[in-house]
Amino acid sequence: MPLSETLQLLRPLPPQPDAPLLIILPGMDGTGSLYKSQLAGLRPYFEPYCLRIDAEDRTPWPDLAAVVTAQVETLRAGRPVYLCGESFGACLGLQMVVQHPNCCDRLILINAATAFQSPLGTSWAMELLRHFPTALYHGATLGLLPFLITEHRVPDYNRHDLIAAMQAATPGGAAWRVTLLSEFDLSAAELQRIPTPTLAIGAGRDRLLPSAQEAQRLATLIPQSQAHILPDSGHTCLLEPTVQLVDILAACQFLPDQTPVLATASTMTPLK
Image 1 (cartoon, rainbow, N blue to C red):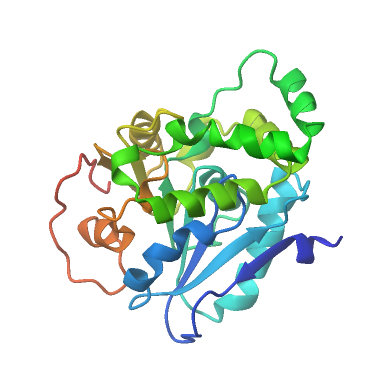
Image 2: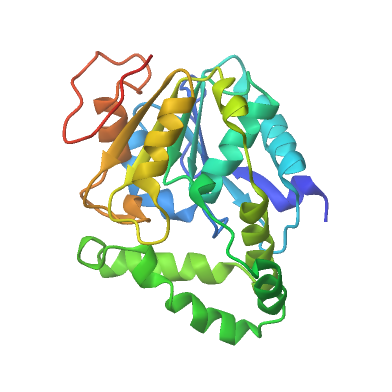
């Protein structure tokens, strides 16, 4: 299947041809559907597009970044571009700006999986996962829920959406994406050369990754960057109704044509 079919930028809302582009790069599920509760707040400022990665896609990082960057360029038409990547998608966003430094005007990283540490035996485990029966894989995804959510903060309807998104992946596709994360490695020097103003958001109660520490680390390395910590949130923080991405962007002066406001309820490093 051509990469143009396995990697697609989909517009979930009616067109806004004069608005800045918000390119949403999804987590491990690859669907982009978990942003739907955030779209109403973002719509006044952006024309959102969500990247959909086919469940059987096997594209390596350099090609993944190149194809998505090319698709963004076809939509750009002189408009500002905001890249927003969550977990796996944050790694993709970083890969894009390292390969193509002018591909976006702002970069937003949410619980970046740059903090992923490949455990001993990952290759063996991924080979086993590739051969999981689909039913067994679907059951295994349920065991991840306690690591992905802070239970009392995510309502049932969002929990069901999360399960559906996780089960949209196939065992082989999930194994490939974990392999990509285990191989992802940007040096401090590469991060220090990123020219894009960057906002790194980290969840303080992420049980899957040390996201808060990683947000602070990225903010110390990327020259024009700041960190925003959500102290009570879990890994899938955007499924928590009390967390609105538009409010975070406003607090961090990251909205287009925004009147500056003071950040609240966050631990931040200022833009350098």
